[in-house]
Picture (spheres, rainbow, N blue to C red):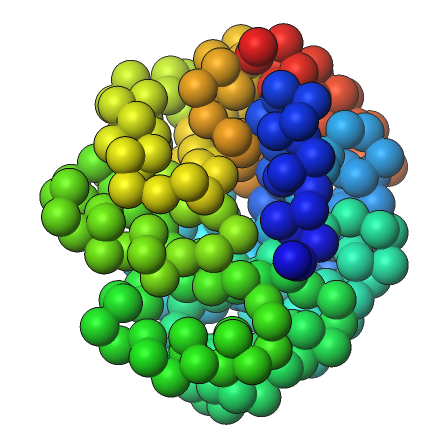
Length: 266
């Protein structure tokens, strides 16, 4: 069982959702992204999701795209992503990498999976990889004993949900609204319905991303989901700050508030 699965099982036994934080690797720099991750872990985050910056994302909203562009301009690539992953797992927190397929293919499918495992990673989220094209990836993740995690959306049919969740392990990633990511003033009410549909197909934990930015939203999602994923809100806190110290202070405050919301969900 991966560190991720162990942590999710522990939280289930405590009857609460997991608080999952997303940050792009190398934003605004490698060292500063490490500092932000450390702050998150110290302030209530249960699981860290590290984004592999990509130049042509299909799922990322403007906040994440801008952060990824900055990371790419700073030269962030596979070695930096893996360095940050190793740093994160050394904090004794489960960590996964979210990446589009192209960087995996470029690195080497077996090699990338092995490198994730070697740096303590629990799994990889692949938003643009279809299950029909993932036979080699499933084999590689099996060999490396890491979790392949897929994304489902409200448009996914019931029959398709069953096919996708059958290939998942660790958790199922639910996109709470159709389209790209970003902090929203309200989270789609369709997310609870989609989580219910997913649960009919699998016993895996179900985590909801794409939009949570406030304590109340976190509380609302934690009431029905096994994991609450927050990304854009943390990035925006760093982007809006005049300096690194202010940015980390803003992330600290936001993480504490959201952690309270997640814990109030049940």
